[in-house]
Length: 335
View 1: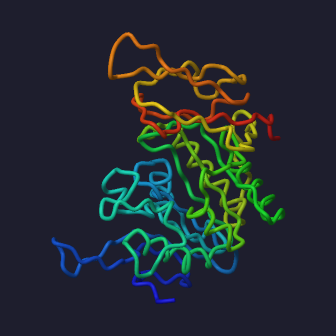
View 2 (view 1 turned 180 degrees about the vertical axis):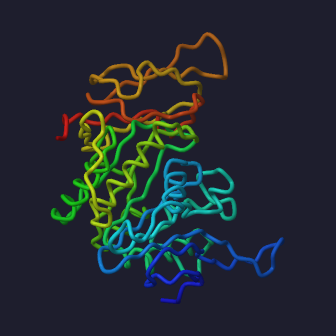
């Protein structure tokens, strides 16, 4: 396969702290010989595992971006063992545009893996991670939240995997992250996810969803800050005791597609439950009101299963095909 056009201004094998860029040549109207400069920090201290920490996979999800920028500014080589690679803004064009997808090619980075070295800007970024950064790491943490269109109970997550030892390690990493919830996550389509690209290389992978709405709060930033430090303890890069949450994390599972409630109508949504509420099968979760006329009854959407109200659409305006709600199975406290 063709070599990537992305070049790193850092030496991944050099001891100490380096701040640099992943430089992706990009010729456009405002800069014939321009480049997209994706910030990267590499911290290395002797031999040991490599942890790859990423945020900004989607540009409107701010907990990972903020907490990883803070970490890159503060973490010193003498505090760790091994190597920590920090990329706070994977999809930099999306971050700079405050949007889920790239402002250049509308690419959704987290639906572009394994990527293409001669493809679009977004595909080139995906390819570099798949063929260059992921092979370097032993552990990977990708921090997400709901962005502008979703609100989600704060959780760290792992996936069901064919390799049960790998799955067990990923679930343990998610638990030790220390979010209020730990999710065994069923993706609607995992084919082109960064998660799948990492897991298919046998790495221990944890992802998160830490609320949403296209903003962050002191609480959600605190979840990310603590979770990153705990993940680095889990990966063996950082010493010290795990920072436990005030309450034990609760295990949630998404065993099948009945967890997802998708809209078959356009309109304005009225939710009848708060996130985190306990839901019973056939409970009315939401009503969708037509914006085309008065006098018509709203359409009621019911839960297809019992569980925890784990996620919802953030804007009240809903379109046909949008996910209105996600109901996850409550498996109890994890000690």
